[in-house]
Image 1 (tube, rainbow, N blue to C red):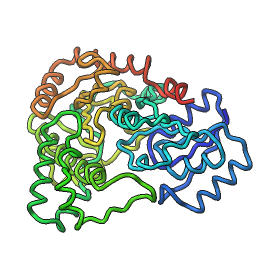
Image 2 (cartoon, helix red, strand yellow):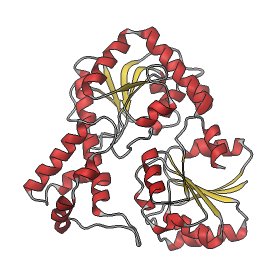
Image 3 (cartoon, helix red, strand yellow):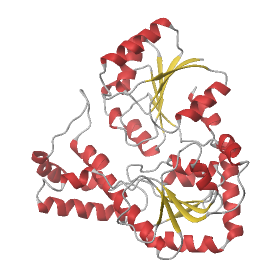
Image 4 (cartoon, rainbow, N blue to C red):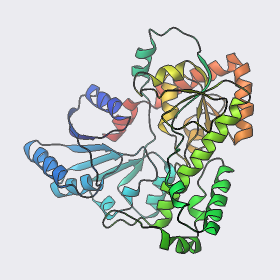
Length: 379
């Protein structure tokens, strides 16, 4: 196929482009920073020039872009998108009904939501890993562990919740703090949209200006749950879990975030996705995954990246982790802080079991969950 790939700054593109080329597709890559998801005159002109000059069988992007969907609809070109974030506010838009769309959602809860709305342009497709690329990088690395427990990721220390609490009444802040506390006590799923009742939303409306795309059907509840409360919950959870782990074992964090609230955690500079992050995963006895509440059921990219490096995964509960992998055989799932602490300490002491699970997870990924598998389904 002749494919126009819209590329922006997100991790999976290099692996997907490489896989598409290896599968024999011809690619034209369009790099452009879209500051508006529904309208950008310069992008529209560039896109139009490309599709008028060259015949494309499809346009592809990571995540869904209203502007691309509408342009593909105008030119009658298939638009294939694959999400790696959830929920996508850009999909709360009438353009998702454009018949040229084929939208693959990695989180089954999002897929089920759109299916319940009778949307025929969506399908379900989990994320993937690239063990072939990663193992080439690790081939000349001396075997052995440098770290006991590692987490690579953002602490979300800069979030909109901290700005919001300075302008809303204390009693509403108290309610939202309680909603966050409730979410912290749930392993898997997302309580936050349900906690934002109609009464609470009506009380918040005078204090918040909701900016959204033209024709967008997203509302204040979705914005608050997704862009505000979920990130604050993840910020509290990640600091709490890392500090608690550091009381009992060696914990290493690789991040760009402010780490002044951490105690006992060994903080390292951020690592580059393609050539440094796999080394951390391969050289850590235990790799922690903490999923942001936005992702209700899906498996985030971090899990597939750890498995690609042959690393041991200790992840929070998500329904799909138990569907795609066998718990305690391919990876290990924890249920809350106490369970995480117990399993970290257990697997640090049991090298043979831990390394067997890591091998099993790597083999399962290689067999069923590579970019080659996904690209063949996408196209």
